[in-house]
Image 1 (tube, rainbow, N blue to C red):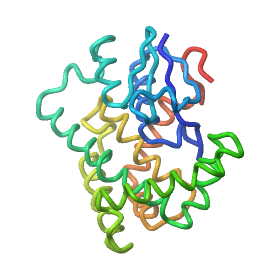
Image 2: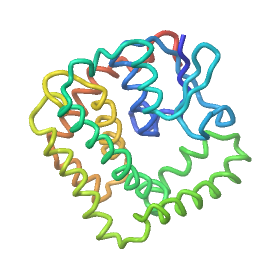
Image 3: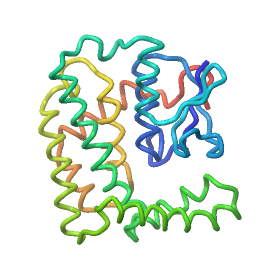
Image 4: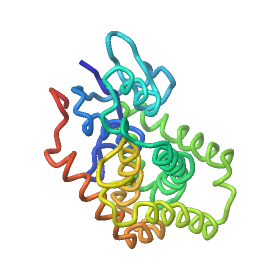
Length: 240
């Protein structure tokens, strides 16, 4: 049995972390049995979430885990994709994970309104006294990382236009299709759902969230995906 170590659920979706939500979405899409549990960061092989435990070994990084699962359990979602579809899916996933992700970080960790909402949720991951001490240090680290990455150097209006460009590009690629690449779900849909719903579900009515909600095809997509794979609100197997 595979054990998924991840962050907690919040905002009415499966996880506060889009990377954790991406991996759990993939597991549900493929039907691979798993048990989910709250992560012990000290066991994370790459120092971040999510990670899995399988056959006595630990493996980190959501995409490396997905590639491992494809090799071990087969690739029912992507095996029939042509090279062009794989390339398009890869490009969308990288926009989500390497660009739009940093806008999510800014909305939650740097924005005063977002931090007021996110702080108590993140503090609850740790023991009470530890959380009060550690979380401000983590916030400083995330703010520094955002500056190092580059997004943290821009004015709010510049940030918004960059985020809107990412959301708009993804919405255009999706169009009116049921899934990112057509009528059938692929592994790339796990990322699309996880990152877009992380913006939509975060309960701070920021300009980027407003803009994303106006992309009705993205909203309908997230609703369809959640109904199809998360409607029962439960993990496969004996998850908690």
